[in-house]
Image (cartoon, rainbow, N blue to C red; front, top):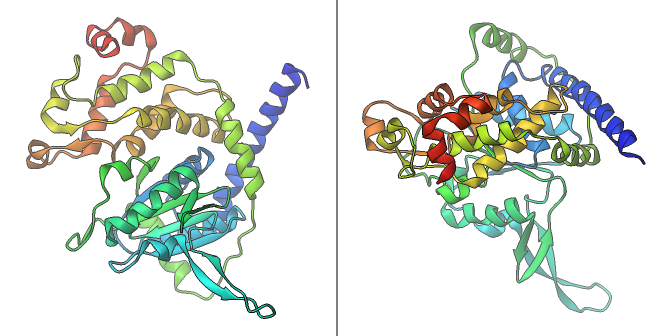
Length: 351
């Protein structure tokens, strides 16, 4: 196949993906009211091979949203309710001794745990001890688990979607920064507006049950993941991503004064990688074969909010990570010419 034919094939795939994205939103709207931004960010993470943390108070349909999305994508779905007594083997699986009915010979057999699914909902992940939380690390990063010294490959595609409850924090185990960094996005699920909540009340108090028609399957999702990697990114977009992330690192030259005052820790290189990959996936969902800085700006909050740490000064002034990100977006030039000529950013790029 020639380069021109290959390019045309990719453009056709982009158009098909845009149509599939619209179909997915249409199917999900039969069950889920509103939450368009959350659904979009979940799909972007999936098409980028990323994992998500969803944070919101109880009753906002986080579990229903993920389960419905799995049905819409023809993927196996598994839900793990994290509790203080949950052990690593409860999620990864365990080995048991099994006796052959004919030979009477006994041998070990591996029983897969709930991690062996395409979409794993880690419900209230901050309710379980660090030992069990850590069992997710290998699965999320390596797509495998190790039990009894043997490695077992997980189902592909594989996504971990973890939920957290921001209230009732007593007796919980907040995720360590190293594990939070494994998640591509941290998505806030907010209260619905009046119109959406009215529709929720009307739908969920009747007897009607909506049927979901699958739009994509596992192989098509893996094809999309490969297509995302092929989307070209201009140097000016990469410069913009680097400018946003490198400004969060206190102690580095050229860092804004408000960052030094409000942050105790900045984002690492994985933030840049996820900004670029997410921007590529977002461009495809909107039917574009190229990335713009608008794609990066749209994903700056879910990518950065769990990778920067505010200090006591910020807490005392009511400043959140989203406040810092908003200020960074306002003070970072989008045009490459302005960015590279700015004396402050010259120092940031030279460090």
